[in-house]
Image (cartoon, rainbow, N blue to C red):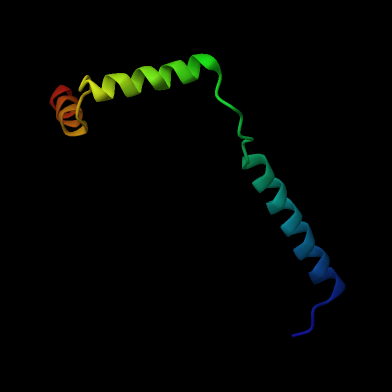
Length: 66
């Protein structure tokens, strides 16, 4: 199979478009802000204290409300 210049150009355009789409999907990582860190610390404390709802219980509660 011989690739023509048109084939190569068409493929390059497609690849550029796909790369652009992928770049748009990337979300830059940022450091969490202080209020977010506090929420994480509070959640860890609640988890250690057993103040959480088990996933199975939550799922069962949701299915009984439907």
